[in-house]
Image (tube, rainbow, N blue to C red; front, top):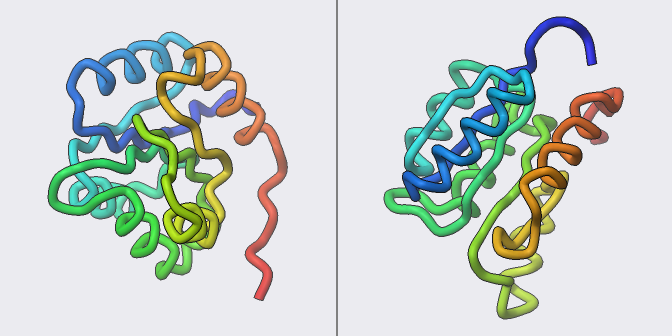
Length: 135
């Protein structure tokens, strides 16, 4: 990664999880923007154009799936890397297809991923050359 701090938007409605992610990513050298629901997260994403978004799925106002759907409608939002985090696995093919169609960089169940692994995945994504969106 270059010397410029990468900006990460965390969209998470659970305060303890938001704080844990924020603290860990700041200590790893990232600038952090926080949102507590999908509506606020979408607005902050489109205003600030973060380098990567961590997106919870189950949230008030606008869930993560609706948020990424709206994000992908924007020219910039089509290609921003998004890591989806949730407390539950998709329970149907339809739910999984809804997630996959928006091309998240990763989809993780929170209880199944270590914080260090998540940070490594973020660093990998941000170090990779960004691919232009294919038409």
